[in-house]
Image (cartoon, rainbow, N blue to C red):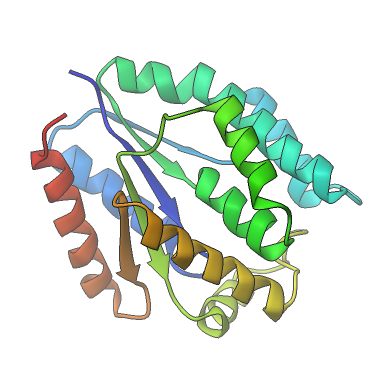
Length: 206
């Protein structure tokens, strides 16, 4: 039996880290083998690219986009697909929807180009479920500001993040795998929503 692939998406400050821990605890309680990973990152190459992308100097938009997909190609081949084939669930902090949102929405890059790279790197392979933690940009930025210094992408302006959020929501309208979670609610309510989604996925046929 193959595993499942769950991605967690959303702008900064919506609680991805806290809720990924909740998902890990739920899987442990239900005796489901899993791995948890992130993008960009998840492999030695991916983590090196992540450091350059978030903390390096100037990176052109095209270079940024190609680095994201280079990290993803390695991640899929080395980590994600082997884990799913072995029956593990994979919990991934961001995936290709973030590329559409940040590079396509935020940076206003050509979505058709992103789609071509998606087809090259993973084709029809998609998450079984994508949890989109959604909150207005002002709320997310206020929460994220408490974490300390911003990285190269977190430092973008309000208009950038509004475009990112809009793209996430547009993506969610286009694919049934998306579950939108209202991240403005209290934590217990957010996690109750997530638990319902996880239970539904667990009970769904392969």
